[in-house]
Image (cartoon, rainbow, N blue to C red; front, side):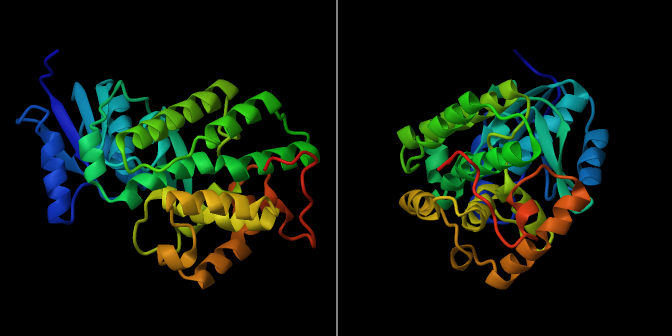
Length: 311
Protein backbone atom coordinates (compact mmCIF):
# COMPACT_ATOMS: atom_id res chain seq x y z
CA UNK A 1 0.00 0.00 0.00
CA UNK A 2 1.27 3.45 -0.91
CA UNK A 3 0.96 6.28 1.60
CA UNK A 4 0.77 9.89 0.46
CA UNK A 5 1.63 11.61 3.74
CA UNK A 6 4.33 9.94 5.84
CA UNK A 7 5.80 11.23 9.09
CA UNK A 8 8.94 9.72 10.61
CA UNK A 9 9.30 10.39 14.32
CA UNK A 10 12.73 9.76 15.83
CA UNK A 11 14.88 10.50 18.86
CA UNK A 12 18.11 9.52 17.08
CA UNK A 13 19.92 12.82 17.38
CA UNK A 14 23.04 14.17 19.03
CA UNK A 15 25.80 12.05 17.50
CA UNK A 16 27.17 10.85 14.18
CA UNK A 17 26.32 7.29 15.17
CA UNK A 18 22.69 8.19 15.87
CA UNK A 19 22.44 9.95 12.51
CA UNK A 20 23.89 6.91 10.73
CA UNK A 21 21.39 4.56 12.37
CA UNK A 22 18.52 6.92 11.59
CA UNK A 23 19.46 7.11 7.91
CA UNK A 24 19.59 3.32 7.64
CA UNK A 25 16.10 2.98 9.11
CA UNK A 26 14.53 5.97 7.34
CA UNK A 27 15.76 4.75 3.96
CA UNK A 28 13.02 2.13 4.12
CA UNK A 29 10.40 4.84 3.63
CA UNK A 30 9.45 7.52 1.13
CA UNK A 31 12.29 10.00 0.67
CA UNK A 32 9.68 12.77 0.76
CA UNK A 33 8.52 11.76 4.23
CA UNK A 34 8.46 14.55 6.78
CA UNK A 35 10.83 14.17 9.72
CA UNK A 36 10.18 15.01 13.36
CA UNK A 37 12.87 14.67 16.02
CA UNK A 38 11.60 14.51 19.60
CA UNK A 39 13.52 15.39 22.73
CA UNK A 40 11.16 14.98 25.68
CA UNK A 41 7.94 13.41 26.93
CA UNK A 42 6.21 16.24 28.79
CA UNK A 43 2.48 15.94 28.10
CA UNK A 44 2.00 19.46 26.72
CA UNK A 45 4.99 19.01 24.41
CA UNK A 46 3.63 15.72 23.06
CA UNK A 47 0.09 17.07 22.64
CA UNK A 48 1.40 20.17 20.86
CA UNK A 49 3.36 17.96 18.48
CA UNK A 50 0.24 15.95 17.71
CA UNK A 51 -1.74 19.12 17.02
CA UNK A 52 0.96 20.46 14.70
CA UNK A 53 1.43 17.18 12.84
CA UNK A 54 -2.08 16.18 11.85
CA UNK A 55 -3.22 14.77 8.53
CA UNK A 56 -0.63 12.03 8.04
CA UNK A 57 -1.81 8.60 6.96
CA UNK A 58 1.37 6.82 8.11
CA UNK A 59 3.44 7.62 11.20
CA UNK A 60 6.67 5.73 11.81
CA UNK A 61 8.53 5.70 15.14
CA UNK A 62 12.26 5.13 14.56
CA UNK A 63 14.66 4.81 17.49
CA UNK A 64 14.01 4.11 21.16
CA UNK A 65 10.90 4.09 23.31
CA UNK A 66 10.36 7.86 23.22
CA UNK A 67 10.15 7.90 19.42
CA UNK A 68 7.76 4.96 19.28
CA UNK A 69 5.54 6.31 22.06
CA UNK A 70 5.23 9.76 20.44
CA UNK A 71 4.58 8.19 17.03
CA UNK A 72 1.75 6.15 18.56
CA UNK A 73 0.19 9.28 20.05
CA UNK A 74 0.42 11.32 16.84
CA UNK A 75 -0.86 8.38 14.82
CA UNK A 76 -3.84 7.88 17.12
CA UNK A 77 -4.77 11.56 16.91
CA UNK A 78 -4.53 11.48 13.09
CA UNK A 79 -6.22 8.07 12.80
CA UNK A 80 -3.13 7.02 10.88
CA UNK A 81 -1.38 3.70 10.50
CA UNK A 82 1.55 3.43 12.91
CA UNK A 83 4.76 1.48 12.40
CA UNK A 84 7.19 0.86 15.24
CA UNK A 85 10.76 0.56 13.99
CA UNK A 86 12.91 0.22 17.12
CA UNK A 87 16.66 0.50 16.78
CA UNK A 88 17.07 -0.65 20.39
CA UNK A 89 14.76 -2.78 22.53
CA UNK A 90 14.59 -0.79 25.76
CA UNK A 91 10.91 -0.87 26.76
CA UNK A 92 7.60 -2.67 26.19
CA UNK A 93 6.01 0.34 24.45
CA UNK A 94 6.37 -1.38 21.06
CA UNK A 95 3.33 -3.44 22.10
CA UNK A 96 1.27 -1.14 24.34
CA UNK A 97 -1.82 0.91 23.43
CA UNK A 98 -0.87 3.92 25.55
CA UNK A 99 1.84 6.58 25.59
CA UNK A 100 3.87 7.44 28.67
CA UNK A 101 4.10 11.18 29.31
CA UNK A 102 5.34 13.22 32.23
CA UNK A 103 2.95 15.64 33.87
CA UNK A 104 3.05 17.24 37.30
CA UNK A 105 6.22 15.45 38.34
CA UNK A 106 5.09 11.93 37.52
CA UNK A 107 4.35 9.58 34.63
CA UNK A 108 0.87 9.18 33.22
CA UNK A 109 -0.25 6.72 30.56
CA UNK A 110 -2.60 8.31 28.07
CA UNK A 111 -4.52 6.35 25.43
CA UNK A 112 -2.92 6.19 22.00
CA UNK A 113 -2.79 2.99 19.96
CA UNK A 114 -0.80 -0.17 19.51
CA UNK A 115 1.50 -0.07 16.49
CA UNK A 116 -0.15 -1.58 13.46
CA UNK A 117 3.18 -3.06 12.44
CA UNK A 118 6.48 -3.83 14.13
CA UNK A 119 9.64 -3.86 12.05
CA UNK A 120 12.47 -5.84 13.60
CA UNK A 121 15.84 -5.76 11.86
CA UNK A 122 18.12 -7.87 14.00
CA UNK A 123 21.32 -6.81 12.26
CA UNK A 124 20.51 -3.17 13.02
CA UNK A 125 19.56 -3.94 16.62
CA UNK A 126 22.80 -5.86 17.15
CA UNK A 127 24.79 -2.83 15.99
CA UNK A 128 23.54 -0.95 19.07
CA UNK A 129 25.54 -1.06 22.32
CA UNK A 130 24.62 -4.20 24.27
CA UNK A 131 23.68 -2.04 27.27
CA UNK A 132 20.87 -0.35 25.32
CA UNK A 133 19.22 -3.63 24.35
CA UNK A 134 19.68 -5.55 27.59
CA UNK A 135 17.82 -2.83 29.47
CA UNK A 136 14.73 -4.03 27.61
CA UNK A 137 14.57 -6.76 30.24
CA UNK A 138 13.72 -4.09 32.84
CA UNK A 139 10.00 -4.27 32.06
CA UNK A 140 10.16 -8.06 32.48
CA UNK A 141 12.37 -8.30 35.55
CA UNK A 142 10.09 -5.81 37.30
CA UNK A 143 7.68 -8.74 37.63
CA UNK A 144 9.90 -9.83 40.55
CA UNK A 145 9.07 -6.81 42.69
CA UNK A 146 5.63 -6.12 41.19
CA UNK A 147 4.20 -9.50 42.18
CA UNK A 148 5.48 -9.07 45.75
CA UNK A 149 3.79 -5.66 45.98
CA UNK A 150 0.58 -7.01 44.46
CA UNK A 151 0.39 -9.88 46.96
CA UNK A 152 1.15 -7.49 49.84
CA UNK A 153 -1.73 -5.31 48.73
CA UNK A 154 -4.04 -8.33 48.48
CA UNK A 155 -3.13 -9.33 52.04
CA UNK A 156 -3.48 -5.87 53.54
CA UNK A 157 -6.10 -4.06 51.46
CA UNK A 158 -8.15 -6.86 49.93
CA UNK A 159 -7.12 -5.99 46.38
CA UNK A 160 -8.01 -8.69 43.86
CA UNK A 161 -5.09 -11.08 43.31
CA UNK A 162 -4.96 -13.77 40.62
CA UNK A 163 -2.43 -16.55 41.26
CA UNK A 164 -2.85 -17.93 37.74
CA UNK A 165 -1.91 -14.56 36.25
CA UNK A 166 0.99 -14.28 38.69
CA UNK A 167 2.23 -17.74 37.67
CA UNK A 168 2.13 -16.76 34.01
CA UNK A 169 4.10 -13.61 34.82
CA UNK A 170 6.73 -15.63 36.71
CA UNK A 171 7.05 -17.93 33.69
CA UNK A 172 7.77 -14.94 31.45
CA UNK A 173 10.33 -13.69 33.95
CA UNK A 174 12.10 -17.05 33.96
CA UNK A 175 12.98 -16.69 30.27
CA UNK A 176 15.42 -13.79 30.76
CA UNK A 177 18.57 -14.32 28.69
CA UNK A 178 21.43 -12.42 27.13
CA UNK A 179 20.68 -10.35 24.03
CA UNK A 180 23.97 -10.49 22.16
CA UNK A 181 22.52 -12.56 19.32
CA UNK A 182 19.36 -12.80 17.22
CA UNK A 183 17.88 -15.59 19.34
CA UNK A 184 18.28 -13.62 22.57
CA UNK A 185 16.71 -10.51 21.08
CA UNK A 186 13.83 -12.57 19.69
CA UNK A 187 13.22 -14.03 23.17
CA UNK A 188 13.20 -10.56 24.72
CA UNK A 189 10.75 -9.23 22.14
CA UNK A 190 8.43 -12.22 22.59
CA UNK A 191 8.55 -11.86 26.39
CA UNK A 192 7.64 -8.17 26.11
CA UNK A 193 4.71 -9.06 23.85
CA UNK A 194 3.52 -11.76 26.28
CA UNK A 195 3.88 -9.44 29.28
CA UNK A 196 1.77 -6.74 27.61
CA UNK A 197 -0.84 -9.28 26.49
CA UNK A 198 -1.00 -10.68 30.03
CA UNK A 199 -1.56 -7.24 31.57
CA UNK A 200 -4.11 -6.32 28.91
CA UNK A 201 -6.00 -9.53 29.56
CA UNK A 202 -5.98 -8.98 33.31
CA UNK A 203 -7.11 -5.38 32.91
CA UNK A 204 -4.14 -3.47 34.36
CA UNK A 205 -0.36 -3.61 34.76
CA UNK A 206 -0.31 -4.97 38.32
CA UNK A 207 1.53 -8.18 37.28
CA UNK A 208 4.43 -6.11 35.90
CA UNK A 209 4.45 -2.68 37.51
CA UNK A 210 5.22 -2.25 41.18
CA UNK A 211 7.21 -0.08 43.53
CA UNK A 212 10.26 -0.26 41.23
CA UNK A 213 8.38 1.83 38.66
CA UNK A 214 7.19 4.29 41.31
CA UNK A 215 10.82 4.72 42.31
CA UNK A 216 11.69 5.52 38.67
CA UNK A 217 8.84 8.01 38.25
CA UNK A 218 10.10 9.97 41.24
CA UNK A 219 13.79 9.58 40.41
CA UNK A 220 13.31 11.13 36.97
CA UNK A 221 12.44 14.43 38.66
CA UNK A 222 16.00 14.56 40.01
CA UNK A 223 17.90 13.62 36.86
CA UNK A 224 19.53 16.18 34.58
CA UNK A 225 19.96 13.76 31.69
CA UNK A 226 17.88 10.98 30.20
CA UNK A 227 18.52 7.32 30.92
CA UNK A 228 17.14 4.22 29.20
CA UNK A 229 13.87 3.32 30.92
CA UNK A 230 14.88 -0.27 31.58
CA UNK A 231 18.12 0.69 33.25
CA UNK A 232 16.33 2.92 35.74
CA UNK A 233 13.81 0.14 36.35
CA UNK A 234 16.69 -2.25 37.09
CA UNK A 235 17.98 0.18 39.71
CA UNK A 236 14.46 0.34 41.13
CA UNK A 237 14.22 -3.46 41.24
CA UNK A 238 17.46 -3.59 43.21
CA UNK A 239 16.41 -0.93 45.72
CA UNK A 240 12.81 -2.09 46.19
CA UNK A 241 13.63 -5.78 46.45
CA UNK A 242 15.93 -4.88 49.35
CA UNK A 243 13.06 -3.08 51.09
CA UNK A 244 10.79 -6.04 50.39
CA UNK A 245 13.42 -8.53 51.62
CA UNK A 246 12.48 -10.34 48.44
CA UNK A 247 15.18 -12.74 47.19
CA UNK A 248 17.58 -9.87 46.54
CA UNK A 249 20.52 -12.13 45.75
CA UNK A 250 18.47 -14.14 43.28
CA UNK A 251 17.30 -11.20 41.19
CA UNK A 252 20.77 -9.61 41.36
CA UNK A 253 22.31 -12.82 40.00
CA UNK A 254 19.91 -12.66 37.07
CA UNK A 255 20.84 -9.05 36.33
CA UNK A 256 24.54 -9.83 36.74
CA UNK A 257 24.26 -12.73 34.27
CA UNK A 258 22.52 -10.42 31.81
CA UNK A 259 25.08 -7.64 32.45
CA UNK A 260 22.20 -5.29 33.10
CA UNK A 261 23.42 -2.32 35.18
CA UNK A 262 21.44 -2.00 38.39
CA UNK A 263 23.74 -0.44 40.97
CA UNK A 264 24.25 3.28 41.49
CA UNK A 265 27.97 2.97 40.71
CA UNK A 266 27.13 1.35 37.34
CA UNK A 267 24.45 3.82 36.31
CA UNK A 268 26.28 6.95 37.40
CA UNK A 269 23.41 7.98 39.64
CA UNK A 270 24.54 9.13 43.08
CA UNK A 271 23.68 6.85 45.99
CA UNK A 272 22.68 9.96 47.94
CA UNK A 273 20.08 10.76 45.26
CA UNK A 274 18.69 7.24 45.45
CA UNK A 275 18.40 7.53 49.22
CA UNK A 276 16.65 10.89 48.91
CA UNK A 277 14.15 9.48 46.43
CA UNK A 278 13.34 6.49 48.65
CA UNK A 279 12.92 8.73 51.69
CA UNK A 280 10.41 10.86 49.79
CA UNK A 281 8.53 7.98 48.15
CA UNK A 282 5.71 7.64 50.74
CA UNK A 283 4.73 11.29 50.28
CA UNK A 284 5.16 11.02 46.50
CA UNK A 285 2.92 7.94 46.29
CA UNK A 286 0.29 9.55 48.50
CA UNK A 287 0.33 12.76 46.44
CA UNK A 288 -0.18 10.98 43.15
CA UNK A 289 -2.53 8.31 44.55
CA UNK A 290 -0.54 5.33 43.34
CA UNK A 291 -1.37 1.72 44.09
CA UNK A 292 -0.47 0.04 47.38
CA UNK A 293 3.05 -1.36 47.61
CA UNK A 294 6.01 -1.75 49.94
CA UNK A 295 6.33 2.04 49.77
CA UNK A 296 3.23 2.31 51.97
CA UNK A 297 5.10 0.38 54.66
CA UNK A 298 8.17 2.64 54.76
CA UNK A 299 6.79 4.69 57.63
CA UNK A 300 6.33 1.53 59.66
CA UNK A 301 9.10 -0.04 61.71
CA UNK A 302 8.90 -3.30 59.83
CA UNK A 303 7.97 -4.46 56.33
CA UNK A 304 5.89 -7.60 56.61
CA UNK A 305 6.39 -10.33 54.05
CA UNK A 306 3.29 -11.34 52.04
CA UNK A 307 1.77 -14.65 53.08
CA UNK A 308 2.79 -16.32 49.81
CA UNK A 309 6.42 -15.99 48.73
CA UNK A 310 6.64 -14.65 45.19
CA UNK A 311 10.39 -15.15 44.85
